[in-house]
Length: 223
Image (tube, rainbow, N blue to C red; front, side, top):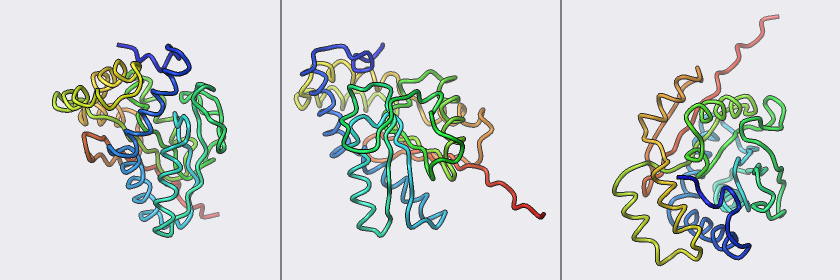
């Protein structure tokens, strides 16, 4: 089942309402928290006090802003750029580029981390693999996925939350997102097929899938 926001269906007011719903979900139901913890782990493991990252499908940049503020309180400086395929999703408040996640318009090793939130479930399995390979190409340290876990209880919670949604687009797209989401076993199989380095997968608060795909470190030159 396709999601209406992907195709910019609906009136401008409905689209803005749906984006506002996404901001609410990210703030109160695990979205920003999951990305923050994944980035914190990368910073800790790679001993980074400052970190650049590309938020793919980052829309209005609300997750990036929340994560940066939170990590700054822990002494970690984050500088995010936003990539989104739709100009209507970008609000121009920070560095933003309109482009394709499967052909990221940046050079190799342009950012410390390439990340996404609530994006991977929009992709078919072969597209997830392509996105992971692109993310690892552009990242110096890691590729991060923050997404939903497909589970019957999760779907029930989505329906229970209908009174909170501002937009009819959200009432269509939210259940569709859970139905399209991957299980941990499915995402593991897909990522292992890419030949990536170590893959760390955890389930976070309220059925959030947190994935870190570590980029293989190049051996030091002996010449």
